[in-house]
Image (cartoon, rainbow, N blue to C red):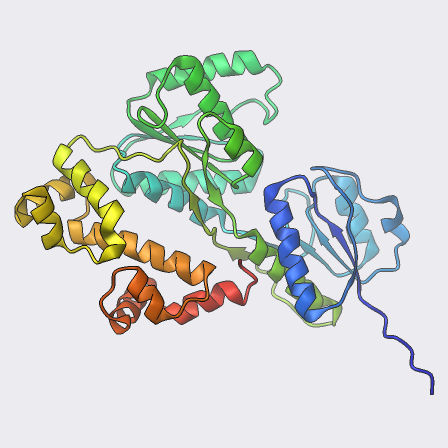
Length: 391
């Protein structure tokens, strides 16, 4: 009996290849296919808003993964009747399941990034053109207001492209000069962050000492070439791509999937020079925080800290609480657990080794304390990234 090769699933990847985030999406898709495939995939070099490939209308395919920008593409995907998963939130009407970044969490993460550095004045610079920009901004503002702190809203540019660049930058420069200093500003995407940093340069405002800026999406070209380099929220693009591919696979097999958006929280705030500074006027606290940064994962205790500073515990606790709203112990643990999370995500080290590397005396204590802070075990935390294809 002749053996006929089975027909490989044919999948079109209508995803732009020009951005860091979308290349991470494609890497996540590739990881899923490597384990569950193979698939026959169509992919080409695509720019933002590129037209759909002309063959798609009569294509004999099985599924589509798409970031949809235009009505033409949206209508054509719908007309194919093929299973499809959307990777870009859009105002265009469709009935495709969606996988993407939790933009609400992104806004909260940036707010906490600034709060943890002692900022007490804030502003936000956003766009109303997309719902996800608004989600980022609204949740940033809500988190700041929960601390009873002010947050100014800078007028958005007329268009994201800003056709009259010089006029726009002149107006933005004036607005920045009028803000109370030091101020932490959240830009809803990295392009807006670049506008802000350029305006600071023109106004002679020191970054991050007077104006600290954080963007969103961690577009490496923009972040690394701005002056100074831009801090930004890093989406978990690989996990998003992996989950989208897994969802499409189920659809192609005729299985039902939830129509509720699957939102993946960002990986981290990638700190660069535009926000890497602490707003602390108390010299004792500034010295304490520097020592904690350098030694938290080396088993530093509050007693060690007090001896190094020649200060009593009660004095140090009172002054750190006033400056940072955290005690010395809370700041030490915050930095230790941040490193624990990084090692769980990015390494295969055992809990015993992670405990040793992050200054915890016993692995059992680390596991118990981690579960109390995160609501899950270290193993579960690691699994949620590994199972979803997160790097």
